[in-house]
Image (tube, rainbow, N blue to C red; front, top):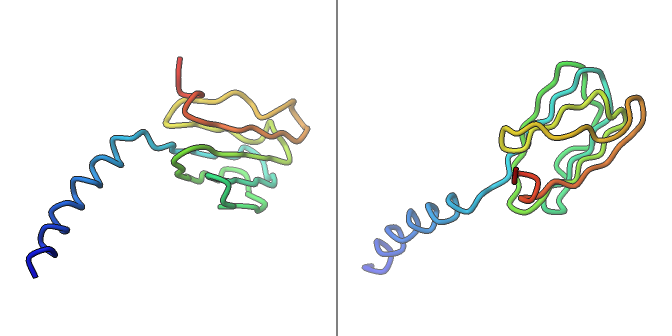
Length: 104
């Protein structure tokens, strides 16, 4: 029975270590209705038509791949930092975001 309390006391420490490793937090906002597809660490999280004014949040440990039907309708923020547009206004666009995109 003693190993269980030790495991319990070890997991908060490991949780702290994983939270100190920078996680990616993506905020996706739409200014017009458009289809948006989000892959986080190669797992599909969203593939849907989002209405204007929608904001969604996603988390990943390594990378996001974002595709939008109308690039100008989507605003991306990675860990609170605004990202450049996905592509030309009115056209579809795709972008891969990683830790490198957070560097100044």
